[in-house]
Image: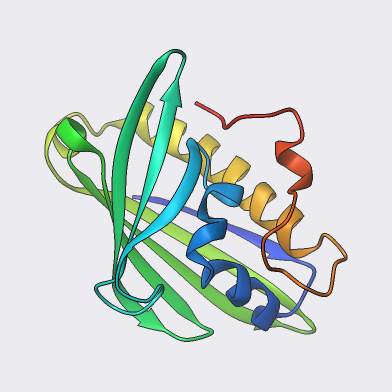
Amino acid sequence: MAVRHRLIKTSPQRVWAVLADGDRYADWVVGTAESRPVRGQWPQVGAEIGYEVRIGPVRLTNETVVRRCEEGAALELEARAGVLGTARIAIELRPWGEHCLVIVDEHPLQGVGGTLHNAGVEALIQLRHRTMLARLAAVCEGGAEDVGPGPVPVRAHGGADA
């Protein structure tokens, strides 16, 4: 199970505002090129967003569904990755003084991803989480009062990570 944390130097409310905006998913989640609501009201339980993953010339469309939501404190997602299966991604926000400690916990649930899960895959997930949390911090600490749609500093080079 890949667990990683990062202290983000802003309030938990500000971090939650980014997590609760389904249109911002691609701004901080590594590997996604764009995101859009599919059904429900994000981040309510059962809501889904769709997103595109680009790996070179290949474009895959996947969806993520909210499985648990404690407003302002916790968001648990089930990411569907086609033939690779599904993964549980739990994001916890903890007040840490005037900042926010973000803890991400991910593990495969079903499919090939669970079967092939090993120490090497775990190391790759850790690297992905490090980048993802850095992107989330950049979005949240960006200095703008409004954390709504807008440019994201870490994506300025265009495109998503693969």
